[in-house]
Image (cartoon, rainbow, N blue to C red; front, top):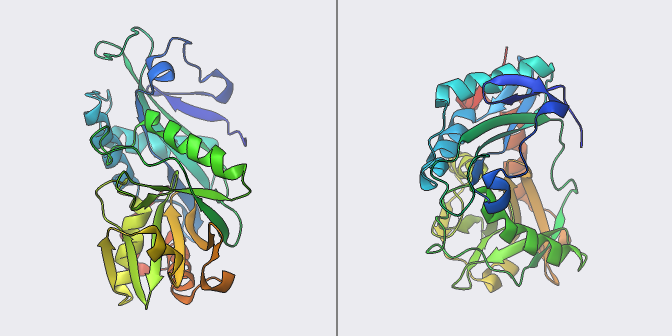
Length: 300
């Protein structure tokens, strides 16, 4: 991966190579950590972070589910993100804040283990770099909402995503799509999903999925563009007869889907509403839409 010079770890900037943890770190064994994926973009006014406050708020909310007391405030972590970007003299990057139970205790009760917090960042292009992608509905389902709280972004959850990703990649697809325990469309391994039918934008309800920040952004943008948006339970067959489909997420941004299993969406072409939303989103993250400047935190 592309390295940068400094990582912020437990209140200090350390060299990339020295940002290390102990082998018996609790989160390494049990997944007892929470994290965020955030992006910083180059704009005419310098680098700007997209919806940083919302990402940090979700980080702290996720930590509450693990009864984790983060040893820094949200305000302190916001300053630390800005500090880390400046220290690395970088204009565009992917940012990974993470809080986790560290070394000092083993066993499934993390209470008493120290909590560590880190912020790493590095240059990273779009996660799915193709113009459009082919998606396979996975044999693995999304975690049951009575097994884990869907609204938390917990490290351990992503083993579910790894299984789904490995399964579909070996079948020649670009990305997986997971159903929920009722057989409805849930989300990708690290993305939310949208479809367009008869010029109406649909996305799964927030029952069994992560409340994505890019998802929320696209819903607000669509409404501003007078595109009708409906959140509902979506059956796989509804997705396969959609006029358009796309993923959203910090890593993928807005990623058109033109194939689901063996079915072509819109004859394999990217749809007009998808292109419009993608275009406006890309203008927003570059600071070119005055109305949405409140979503940007300028590094300066």
